[in-house]
Amino acid sequence: MKNYVVLSEEVKQAKEQGKPVVALESTIISHGMPYPQNVQTAREVEQIIRDNGAVPATIALIDGKIKVGLTDDELEQFGNSQGVAKVSRRDLPYILATKQLGATTVAATMICAELADIKIFVTGGIGGVHRGAETTMDISADLEELGQTNVAVICAGAKSILDLGLTMEYLETKGVPVIGYQTDVLPAFYTRRSEYKVNFQADDVNTIAGTLKAKWDLNLHGGAVIANPIPEEYAMPEDEINTAIESAVKEAEEKGIAGKDTTPFLLGKIKEITAGKSLDANIALVKNNAVVGAKLAVELNKLA
Image (tube, rainbow, N blue to C red; front, side, top):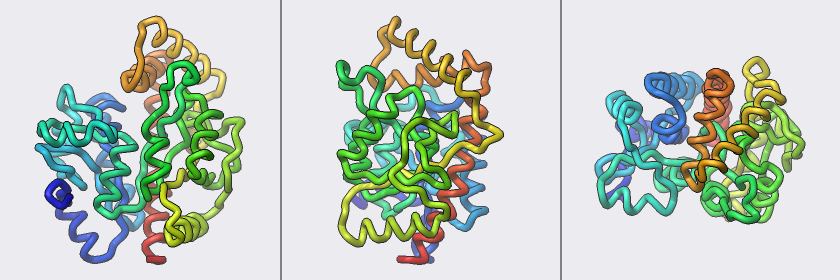
């Protein structure tokens, strides 16, 4: 295992000094945003984590290694490279063996974070049960990973392109707590609210840190979803985003787009329909999640 995991100098020093570390995924850089916004956003998110008392560890696969923490050059390489593989649990061994550039999804980032003993991971939104999954069985590996890997995921809920009700049911079956940070309902990525209640509301990070410590002290394996709504000023009008989503889903069906190509296609189409407003919202919510994730990592570190 140690042969595969390489810590950046910053992350290695943080671990040696007992500082809190926050994992970040790389799919958002390679598949979630256009260049150069992707690299700029990645750097800004890393800085937000530093400013809030923790050390960022962006995770990616480079030359047969799991890099935990990227240099500035590596970030640039990722943001500017074509054909970067999108890596989930099933893809990890092959992409490492073939030494391809690989960007980690939520599931793969959780696995790599756990290998590096990092408990807190910040992302935009988790994957989930896709609309129509009762016939397609299209369910994100993120949910399965949350059921078995001891990493807490700070996100703005699940992307509203998904079936949020079925996603919550799946998480319940897997015993994954969904904790609303200062909210009693699941945020829907671009919007602050959905019709689905979270399992618990926590108004401060201390409560969440205590909950995570108790969960893992009891050997209750699996992660937790910390649902943190997009800031009010960046939230999109519900009607506007729902119309854009319906239109994008319809087009994906007509074009026969399925599997792991679905989310990138839908997000790109929604950005096009909303004239870029969805991308602005995406960037704002990731930065907001970074603030909460860093503060949570600091509190959890105190309890260690």
